[in-house]
Image (cartoon, rainbow, N blue to C red; front, top):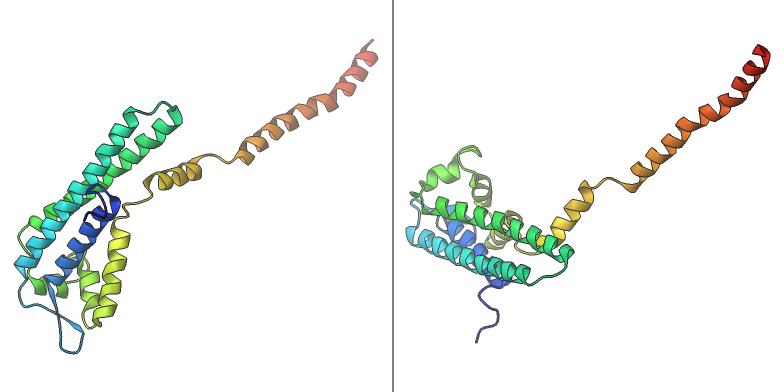
Amino acid sequence: MELYPEESEIIAEAHYKLSLALEFASVTTSGDDGTNAKREAMDQDMRDEAVTEMELAIKSFKLKMQGKVVELATMASPEDNDLARAAISEMKEVVADMEQRLVDLRKDPIDASDLLGGGPEANPLGGILGAALGESAAETKARIDEAAKNATDLSGLVRKKKAKDAADSPAPAAAANGKRKAGDDAEPDAAESPKKARVDEDAA
């Protein structure tokens, strides 16, 4: 029984997070006491599974994006068109990020000791993977879930775009201040007019 269609964001996000978890598991192993330890050699089978899951995540999200494109073609409202175009643009960025991660996964595996023992400059995942060593399985799961959540949020694209636009737009108060300033500039002229009248009378 199919609970969600293949193009569902839930499916795409599930594949993406599973890929991250498999990538992590390919360089760590759980000890008898529940803590994590680095593997002597990377588990290539798990890494291959991580590649497969990332491919499925990309496929699912592209289907979602294609649906948005079809939806855009049937829209009549200019405002709805703008929102749909903004959502599609952000979806393309998400796909590009996932495709780059797929490229990285397909590269020659990095030695586990280098990945886990090097500094942050050695590998961007070093901070996450290295910090997880010595943690319990539950603590590690929480860390990976948080990393996956922060890495790519596949939902609420349109809402995020609208919030960004609102932040970038000038505040109405600024325009109002500008109008008051124009009025202030005009007031000195009005105040000076009686003086000009008296000067004219003296000259006469």
